[in-house]
Image (tube, rainbow, N blue to C red; front, side):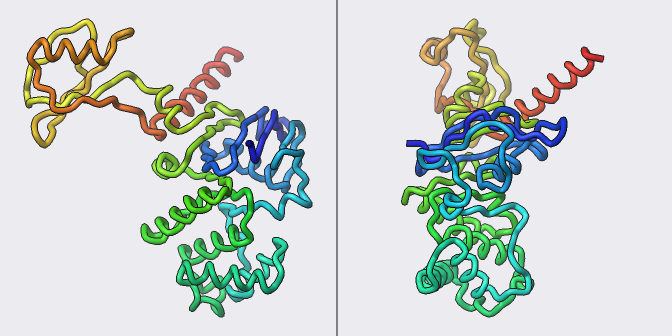
Length: 315
């Protein structure tokens, strides 16, 4: 069942189309990556999902019915990239205040704040002010205040910014646990390696439009180039073939790693049979899948090139 269903969403600022006819669905318990370069429309999209902005056109359904900001905002946790903590307020008081704003009673808020502070080893911070915290410590506090009321939808915009590897891993593990408990998470970041590691599904937006949508593995399969790594002896002569071509050779621990490109309609079985027939030692054979970073750059640069070509044609 979809927890969040966005249909034909549009938001304009004058002639600028910040979000231009974007649709997608997110299943409950999914970690969903929202990707795009600066100015792509990600922030505007998130602000409409959280009820901060109203769409000019389109529909947002939350938990099976039309989104109602006044009611549904209590079931959403939003951690924006621009942090929203009160610098002069004590940390314990601030966590309690924000928990009660999300509908928790004072006693429930106290129990949950204490539990999260213990989990993140933040007990000694209770009477400190936000302005006395490092960026990483402030990030941990912001995360806690985002999730402690147990929202159904959690939106995290650059949640690992400023965190050291230990604390980044701590929050990453909590994200996994929240998803296992049925929370749906929208994860927005510029760090593609984090997306590959964490997310189940992604959407890529650029210039207000959706240009990619699917599972991480499905997207990588779609944009693969049918290249393979062959591990064999160093300096071996690969046979001339109509089924593949040599792209490059690199040194490997026990010989060399050869990158080969399969020709159209050639199968891995055909290539392996040919290599064996020509007595090529095979220590390993694996498909090369593109990284999300490679796909991101390829698609975004392709969009820019198309836009430039259109503008030149129009002029």
